[in-house]
Length: 307
Ligand code: NCD
Image (tube, rainbow, N blue to C red):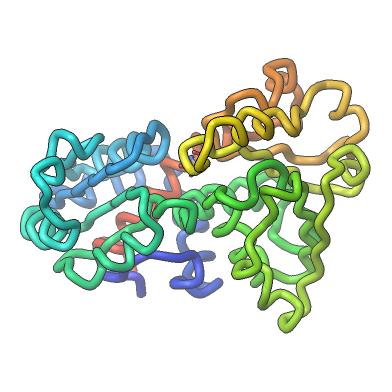
């Protein structure tokens, strides 16, 4: 039962609850009209303190398709944050106007803090370099669709694993599924944080770290590429030095399995050459499309229009 629940980190939902969301999202995708207008009269508050294209618009599209309405802001300069209002006060206020709040903020822990002051459920759409659980719903649904199940897979994460919140959330979520091996591919400066992997050994999840994409690409069932997160760097020189550490192109794709799935949360900068887009293994735009269906399933569950 997800009615009224916050979603701050992927572990907030059990595997059974995730399964319910995926089944619902698949039904919504299959039957175009399913749940249409089920959220009539409900309001989504979208508070985006950081830029977004897919996450914000897919949430808004999801709510509109469910028959509800949306309010909020796409940048904090148009809200009272610019006058110095605290996040707690903003959230307390907006939760009087909205039935559910989706929020993106540059500070780690902001969504958790908001959940302590909000009268409405808070959905974390990214808190700094920490977590992004609804991208994980999208990623898991795409893996399920492309691979048939989330089981017995070798998943490679490549790029900025230090600041990439989508990587943190997906790695933590995948660790709960059976027989998953993770390979973390990054420059030493952008390694996956210990707080993500520290529990892995205790629950029998095997993983390795490397800097060499070409060495491991042939072992992967899923390759999750990521952008180097420029906005989280302390200086521009480091960003410039690291930004093109990995570029997936046709030549590297020839070293991969014939059925490897390429994912990317988007936006991409240089890390996937456009020539890869036409490769049937490239699933990142399909992934973006699933984002709306999975958010329709999430909103209708949190708002209690389905059980
Ligand atoms: C990601 C994010 O905001 O963390 N984008 C998204 O929501 N799909 C990835 C990124 O910005 O690199």
